[in-house]
Image 1 (cartoon, rainbow, N blue to C red):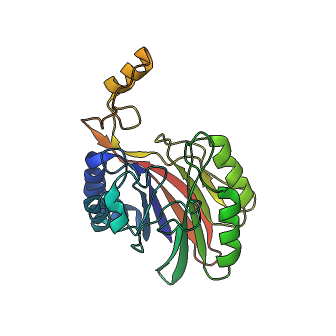
Image 2: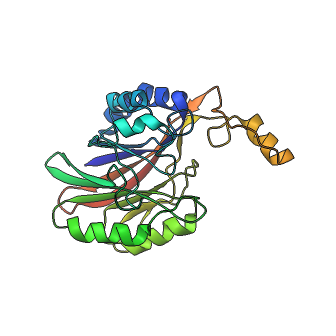
Length: 256
């Protein structure tokens, strides 16, 4: 089985890039299941109903979110959709769900969305304890467990990788919008990469207009970020999983 994780969709240009490329990628690489992080799809912050429908229609099987989950109010109208996940470590009672179990090619795949706490100004529960508790509860029910860890600090992501090594199938990082070159299979068999990158404007600062970003850094004055124009790119990562063992045998970063 081959599972594709697509990095943070940024703005309409990112959604359009996904629509243009995803079916070709699925065909070229024989992809069975697709996870897309879309917390920046609504022009950099949040997810609209149209964004959701476009991403699912493009071929995504699951959409994950992050610190901008509630960036657009209309998400409350779709938050209970089975293909949409928000970080599991929001406080108890918050609407939506942090994981779901999907069936694909005779396998049960659990996808978990969690959010880091280091350098992210959102009050959440401890993601390590929340994810570990869930994994203990579901590991006998599923074949494959995948975690999208939406976090700023690489150290926090690496620590989560070692914490869950041997307990889950894949942990990939999102949020920092820069694809890292540290993909590896950890000692106990869990596949890991710190960040799978971004899908959106190529000549930008994390998807945002570079002039606006420069003004912020050069003057320390407030400047509203806006999604950049121009050429787009798609970043993602493919995890090849051996059917008999349910272990990852190969990790391949892609850029389109």
